[in-house]
Structure formats: structure tokens, C-alpha cells
Amino acid sequence: MTDTLFPTFFHDLFLQLRQTLTHNQLAQGGLLLGVFGALAATARSWPQRLWSRLLEHTTFTLEIDGQDQSFAWLSVWLAAQAGSRRMRHMGVATRFNERMGGHALTLGTDQDGDEITVRLVPLSGRSLLRYRGHWLLVSPSREKSQTESGRSLGYTHTLCVQMLSRSRHLIGPLLQDAYEATAGAVSGQTEIYTPEYQNWQVSDRRRSRPPGSLIYSGNLMDALLADVGRFQADREWYQEMGIPYRRGYLLHGPPGNGKSSLVAAVAGAMGLNIYVLNLATPELSDERLQTLLSNLPRRALLLLEDIDAVFMGRERRSETVKLSFAGLLNALDGVAAGEGRVCFLTTNHPEHLDAALVRPGRADLHLHVANASHEQVAGMLGRFFPSEQFPEAQFPDLGAAQRLALAGRVPEGTMSMARLQEYLLERRGDPARTVQDWAELCGQEETAAQPAVSTPEPALPESAPALLCQLFKTNGGLPGVSSSGSLATGVIFRGAETPESPLTCVHG
Image (tube, rainbow, N blue to C red; front, side, top):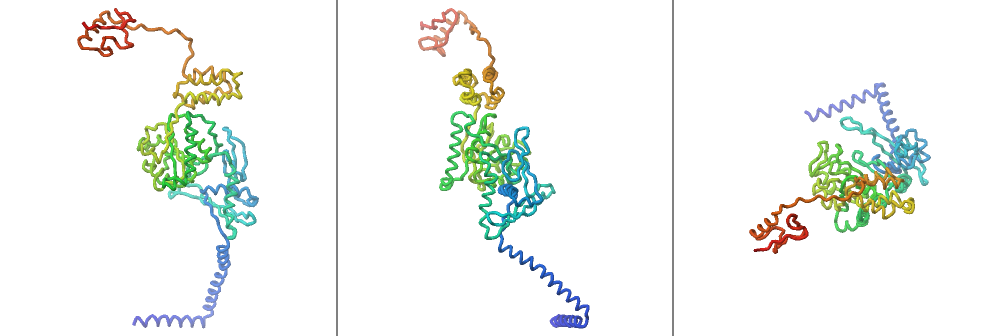
């Protein structure tokens, strides 16, 4: 019965609809309107669909995330192009000592002498550019980003560059030109990067410090530069040997002797940018540290300063530190650790560091940056008072021999280079005052020479020689007395015997 019920129902429904449409004009009109509306809607979407399909097959889109380094190059380069003048929504980025081109306006200098530069950056809108005979459609955009709790994380920027598919070969030259016109044009400078969430951002650009401007004992600088240079040149050898291609250094010693300056000089000489990471940051967890280090470029210098202030052995020094000691070890040389980087650890107290942190593989070379030696003091005097500006004929107190003599008055290894530099800075250009106040630097007081006054030693009783002889005969000898009974050299008795005559005991 069920098998015959459904066919009968649909058959009756079909007959009812046909009769209604045949004899009811209102139903006929409604049906026609629905059909024509559907056709119109479909026809209206056809051009959009056809246009979208056409763009998919004939164009290419390059999308650059705002956290990528190339975003800064392209955004600055775009702002400098003539076509960008049609953009109506741009932002202002204020930087200090930045020379990346673009629509940059130098407003002046701050109280520290740093140039204040305002750079215009496109935020939204579209710009049609002609590049090497091809048309590019550039579309910057931004979206507000926030955490699950609603805390604002700023804006997420994106830059889209559309071009015809046959123009795809322009991607390489476009990025190259943008880099050379901005960051690549900044020659002789070292970029300083700091963490921004899970990536890195440029926080400063400084003129690279020549290694010759720093003074260290012995061949410390030359040995370090040679080691880093050898590491950079041996990449293929590391791969052939199956050794992870990374190098670690531990700089230890008293504060104020140029550990950070040494790192900056190495970075400038080797053409490396410095990535500074503060391990005591409360927001730095094991996962975030791993992500940050994995996002380091291959040619990067990672600097972890004052690492002893974070861990005492394997224990955290502060409850605000989230990073674990095991997480630090795994990030430095674990399975997921990146390769190609140079890592510098600095500490004032190497004895506070766990041996696992400074073993080979994490800190391959340990360098002691000690307090000022006589060689360094003389070198600093030579730098502040060069012979070209202060010839020995006019300034005899600061000749080569006099500099060595002044350096010899400074107690070896007791004064930091920072203290010496501050002393010379206060007296720069004034050699007479420098020499006059030198005793103050050394912690000495210039006093008139006085004859030495000897303090008489207490005299032994007159019976002492006889008592010693008696003990010698009874016990068979005394400490410090020879077998013949003569006292050892340097021991003098005062009393009945004369100081010139050694005390002798004759066996009876």
C-alpha cells in the first residue's frame, strides 16, 4: 500500500499545479516573474564571474606580510614613486637616524644629536604604476589585530602587487630595486633588531664601528675576527662534515670593559646585523623563544647580554621570568635550532653559569675581557692625544715614553676601561691637566718623599742562644737549623750574639 501511495500523491500534485497554471493568470504571472528574476540574477553575476576567471588566468598577485622585512623596502619604495601621489590614505612613521629614502622628511635633531626623520607609508587605496614597461597595481591594506581577551595588538599590514602573468619575471628585479633604493643604500651602518611579538623589527641603525677604534689586550680583537671570518667561509665544510653550521662565543669579565662594543665591532666588520634578545622579558616563553630564533636570517648575530642576570645555575633569578633553562638550551642548539647564525653570550660572572650552557656547541670560544692593562692604558692615551695633534716637542709630558710611564702607574687589572675613558673625556684636549690629575685616577696621593724609618725588632733575651742550643742537643735538631748547628740563611738573632755572626751550637 505504501508503494502506491507516493506515486499517486506526486501525480495528483503535478495535475493540480498544471491546472492552476493553465487557468490561473496570477499564478502564471508569478511564475514568469520568478523565472525572469532568476535569469536576470544569473546574467548579472556572469560578467563578475567571467572577469574573476579572466583575472585568475591572466594575472599574478604578490602578497607581502607586514612583518616581513621586504614590506619595509617595498612600502618605502612605493611611497617614493610618482604614481603614489594619487593615494589618499597614508601613515606617518617616525624614525631616528634612518636613511631609507621614500617620502622622508628630516625634521631636525633631538637633544642627543640623532636625526628625526618622518616617513610616509601607504595604508590603503590603489596605485597604478609603470615599472620597466609593465603595469603594476599596488594595493596596501591593514586590519586591526587583537587577542582573544580583546587586548589590542595594533594593526596587521599587507601589501598586494598585481601584474599580468607574463610580467611575473619582474618579481626579482622589483624586490632587488626596492632593497637597493632603501635598506641596501644604507652603507656603513649596522642594523639593530629587537623582538616584536614572534618576529623582529629594526629598532636602530648605527654607523659601523671600525675594529681599530677599540683597544683590547693582546690580539683579542684579531683572534675573534679571524675566528668569525673562518666560520663564515667554512659553510660547505660544515655541511660535508655533518656539523651544525652555527658558532657560539662567551664574553666574560668585569663590567665596563667593552664586551658589547666588541660585539658591535665584529658585526660591522663582518657585515652582520645584530639581533638583541632580553631573556628576562616576562612575555618570553619557551615557545616564543623557539619561534624568534627560527625566524632569524641565516647571516645574523644573536646577542644575549648579561645572561647571568636571568639564571643562577639552572634556576631562574626572578619569578617574572617565564623562560625555562631547558627551553633556552633547546633553542640554542636543539633539533629545531636554525643554522648560519653567530651567537654571543655576555656575562660578568661566568661562575654563575651552568656548565651545560657554556659547553662547546653552545659557547665554542670563551674570551675573557679583563680590566685595563698597561698596554690598553697607553693605547687610550695615544688615541685621546695623538702625536699628530699633540707633538712630543710641544707636549713632552705625553710622549711615547711618558705614556708608558703613566700607564705603569695604574695598577694592572684593577681599573675598568669605562673608568679610564670617562677620566680622559673630562680632560680631552688638556694634556697638562691629564698628567696633573693622574694620581687621582690611580687612587694615589702625591706626597713628598720621606726617608724610610725602620722599626727596631724586639730583642731576644740574652739566654735565648743558650736555650736553643740546649734544645738542639736534646732533640737532635731544630727546624730551620742545619746539621752543623748553623741557623738557616735569613734568620738573625739579636741578643748576646752579634748580628753579623750566625748562631752556632757545638755538640759537646
